[in-house]
Length: 308
Figure (tube, rainbow, N blue to C red):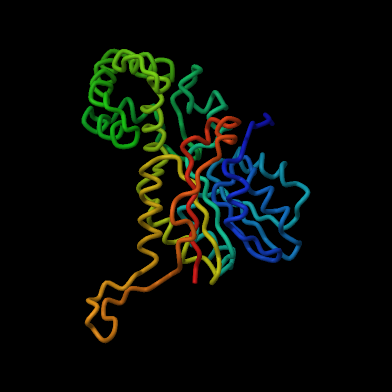
């Protein structure tokens, strides 16, 4: 098995945010390289349980090796969007804490054949779960010009989205786009040299988000995760994209359930249910030291919610 290079983002802040009980039940919904899970497991006694969820079979196998000294861990290959269903299948009603570290794992980017990176040549794949049918290749070769432009702008915040979509559609009339290198060359013709990084970065991000449906279910996933917490349980979510952060923030805000009734009413009639409180009034950001050591942490934001 290839060794994954994984540096967990906002590790200390996440562990503090979870407020781990030694005999508690915790969920790492994005197991990845198990960097966060390792520290959670170290804080648990044998009476505690850690549930590690990941779509990626390779990630789970790597995590099993990293966490081999612990015998109180349950591994689940599935999507954290199904957290309620996963816990029901395990006959677990509520948990003490949940961690979601959103976005793509560093080892997935580094695995050349997975097609996440615009640096090396590889097949256009980008699937976190290899069992699914939709790939990056299918998106760039079958989506309409309008739909391509829309996802590149929406998920990549790429201002040259229309030009990129147009050029992709022109290219594929003559030849199917099969590799990351082909796609990068198409993008480079549309994006002038900029100081903000590689010209293909935003488009690759957008296609990856579309392949793995990372944004659309997120709001409901956060609500489901809150519902799965015991009183006093904590939900810690790390985001790397403005759309992710917006969905998390909105779900947290709505879960506070503040009464919207006019102040002159003698009692509440709006029926707003308070599920808990937001621990982080503003998101926790990585320190300058962390950003220098791990450049992938630069856009990270951590938000913490506590169930009541």
